[in-house]
Length: 287
Image 1 (cartoon, rainbow, N blue to C red):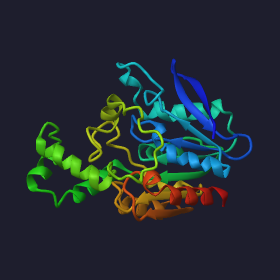
Image 2 (image 1 turned 90 degrees about the vertical axis):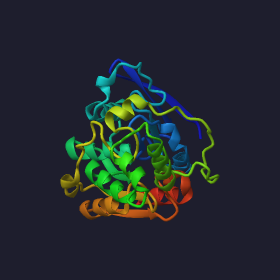
Image 3 (image 1 turned 60 degrees about the vertical axis):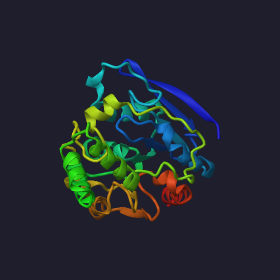
């Protein structure tokens, strides 16, 4: 389906967005990409939802993907910037009702927004391979590397990024829990995407997916989950770095929620089991 491109003024720069479908006919779904520092173009498999009549809003967060900002603007890379940007996108499209899907960091952004801001108009929420607290993420990952060689565990825990053992450990962790790049079933039509903005990623998250050590290290919405009363679909992969414990906790605390565990997926289930994901999201949004 045809994409319509928008450049939304924000903080002296632009948020680059694209829309598929008619935003006036049905409640649209806003996609919040991962990272921080990633790009929304990597969520290409979710475009199939538009064929089922669900209007979609994809946007690259400020400094990410095609929403380019020159280096040296590190003061922008805060939760406040991205919470305000989400509200600016909603205002730009004059949305009265909408749904949100947040993947990984995008799920953190969605949870922070829902638990700290007025979210009038939000109809349904989809939390995809995300986390309710950086501490539980770090603690779970310590357990996930406990069978690694002791020398590898040591450099990973010490964040010794220049060590060869560190690089080997990270490579193993990514292959086991993030994605298998050699897997030919990933249904990306576009083969190349904008690179992750490492300035944003390192400042806000850290040096790797393994441990959150940046400005998001104190992120924690666990105590606020019980106050979320919006219908919520939680999705994660069986081999995901967003572990079963994290998703069980969110499912237990968010009253009106249900959880889909993807039996074959790691951290990018939307690309590993796309048809199941599309079907379940469509069903949830139509209920």
